Amino acid sequence: MSSQESPNTQPAPQAPDPKRRWVLWGLPLCGLMGVLEFNRALGGNHLSWVYVIEWPFFGVFIYYMYWKLSQPQPTYDDSDDPPREVE
Image (tube, rainbow, N blue to C red; front, side, top):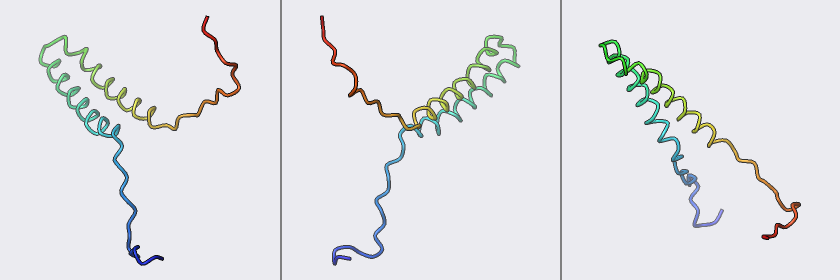
């Protein structure tokens, strides 16, 4: 151990995942809006029945995209492909 390093050095914290912010804000917001539209639909606003289905769908979509974008991406090796020429 060198004299410059302290024995209690903690590793640097990692930056938070920017995609997580969309999930943490989006899912509760979509759930809240779904409940709000459900209450409006029960009150007689017939158009709100469409939004009762739509807001939870948006929440599922946000979670799906977060999951999809968080998966490791396979590397594509195109070194065996022949060179392309422009005609």
